[in-house]
Length: 272
Image 1 (cartoon, rainbow, N blue to C red):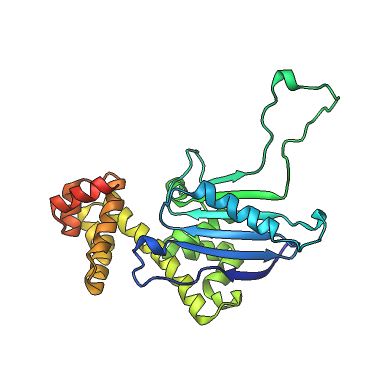
Image 2 (cartoon, rainbow, N blue to C red):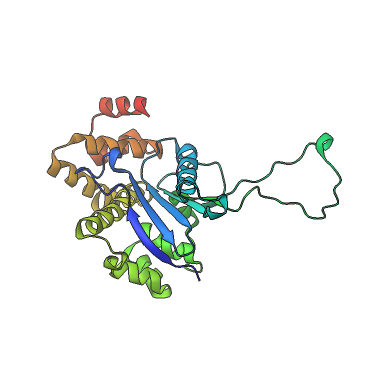
């Protein structure tokens, strides 16, 4: 039975302004008992390099899995899981799995060797998973699968997290006892802080755009405004405005919600 041996946080530092785009990546390196190395990446902002980052992590973990002089048979499976707070691939699923698959052969290169069933994949040792949270939320799946139960831990309301914890004891364990992950107090606080940032930012925008202006101000965006005032950084409001523009929120609504001028919003629109 596969189980976790060790969890390492590769970049535990978090900038003070958690709405700033620079904070947006968390990397966890997970080692399983069969020697499998899993790199789990949580990425808030689209840096337009997911298709380059994932192969880099995957190949690095695979290459570093053996010592100099060891035979290739000692290489262990390398898996990369990217949990994205944005849509990246033009695919109609929130969980995409990619492996090194052979291309369809050209007719002039086919040789009749007699194989009734051909190999589909070049290797079983490299594997990539992409989870796009906006697609997951749009699908709004029930708690029937383990992946749905775990993802609701990231983006669900308190009620949804409670439901996930009720049906999945492992989710309940992580939700209640992050200490069981052998993290220091500082690392644990950083981990919780990032989860809160994902939920707060997603909820703020969703509430403003989907549930109406008044309710959005009261329940979501107002939280971001208050945070901006406290920290004295107008940049926070501008970052939220950019996200709302990307979701096709009208300029009038953004002005009403965030208090920015029409000119400021038009300038931000040019940057997108």
